Length: 393
Image 1 (cartoon, helix red, strand yellow):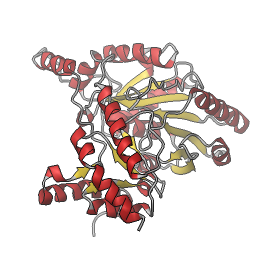
Image 2: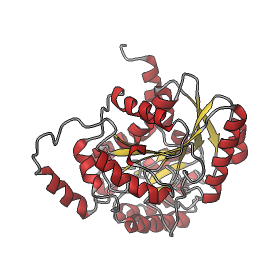
Image 3: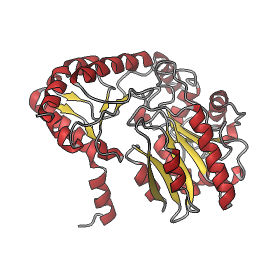
Image 4: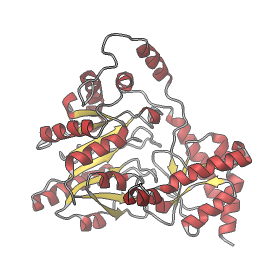
């Protein structure tokens, strides 16, 4: 076998979502797509805003010399200027275009941050449940993931977090709105978190960076507000993308924003700009940078996701499932009535595809993505009831 042993091990650990995706393709081929209820993949199905198509068409006909050439590794300055203006409003601080790096999606941005900040053995705290790839991004750059549980409603457990902090802690990585729970951390919690990290870092003579992964920031419900992490600590970075709020996951366009008053900011920006190049990204896609420059205040129709959430919650309520109603993103994370892998097997028998919670670091739950057609949700009601009845026998 020529494949690295570590990659073989990683493939086994990361297989849950892909397994469900592949099983979904098999089942749809066998039973017909209309008879399979696939909630396994967080692939946004709401179309991009109409303005996206128009801007894309307008820019695609430009044939000025150099329009597809290399640019500064951090991205086009005028694109970063537009993004800095919006982030300044979101974060409540005065961000300059030099504090922004354009990246190949949020995933590329997180890898750039890890490459720039981590020495071998440095620890990154992640909160369970977490996005499945975090472990791998951290390992890519010699770091060690330290998993800290959240409370029963998936909010930050500050006692558990404080116990995990040590002199090797370099980054605390949060994801709000959260995948897979849809939880949004409150402003009070973010302020408390920032102070805790600053105080602990000062005591240990070590900077602890708060990194917020925010691709779902604009997909929130019930007038929920995602608070600023830059208002909580100067040692903060925001990483995000246009994958979810513009429905452009395949275009791989994202960004990093650095607090303008961060100590050693310029050294970090230089390191991240270099990382963007030597990791092989070189720069974010040129055409998509030019497109999103004109779409800073545009988003998909989030009322579609809000309506689906209500439909799905009504089905789960009727079938007797327990869950925390999501404040954002497009996922539900119900408790499993039995072992989560066993229950997802029962769901498959009812032609429902869900992902076991252990894939997100939290056994005993399962994830349902409601970025699917309304009819898929509506037609799944009887199957969910049958699955719950089977589990309770």
